Image (cartoon, rainbow, N blue to C red):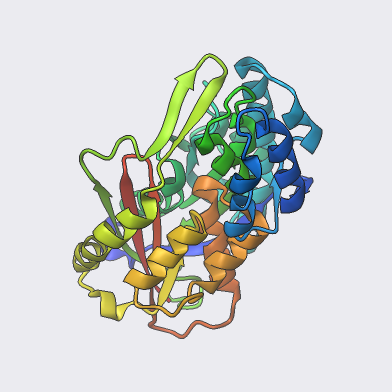
Length: 359
């Protein structure tokens, strides 16, 4: 066994994505909200423009639109989560492994991140036989990081690859945000989440490719921050019907106040400065969040165009979304050797995750 220190940085060998089959146009979702919230808010028409302001054209869900017009218990919703999360995870994982040219026997560990359903044993244990992975594959399920888990999972998987460089590592993220919808919740947070969140899955293969500089970007390192006293910014309230969303309007302000210094410290942890960054793979939490990120990163309005494209076409899929953005960057053809990028996402905690790449 070669010592980990004798290997170069691990690389992102591939990224792949998958969405469920039910496509819902934003105008259809707006009509649904009008029907569901009109009794709670007599001025519902004043609130509905949020469906336009989030700058989303359509989203995908694992259940058809009519499902949302009826009440569903937590057990039913969670059964749907297990079934659909497994199917979507398999699709994304197979695509990622095929793109990387990595066979099942070459995978030494699987990291599985999700926050929108529960399963014990975790979904990764059910996914392993479907993919043909060895029964000795290390399983690392990660729950509760929310929107930050795409970036956080990438950093965790990279650390494992450094420790065990002989095998590839598979990262899988899946979120079925639609299944967390609370039929009886007529709060404004529920209305906003109904305009924003969606379902999807993504996977990445990490590994070493000695001598092959074209194999994929190097992962230079990651950095995590959790700010004290911000636990109520985002998360779940666990109620009888399942997960009830907690969502603060303060997130764009937190980006402006906290991210500049946090990014500077994160860059310093890998020997960089913010000025060294050429590409920004930013989780599109929403249009206003992207506006705030563009301000603090010194970009022109609309500068985070790949993040905005993913938001427009797929909505906010929680942890999965930033990997959709990374996939598009890797496929864009606009990368030059030696350029530096950062994968950034915010999530419950309230926390920030940054992962640095060299292309």
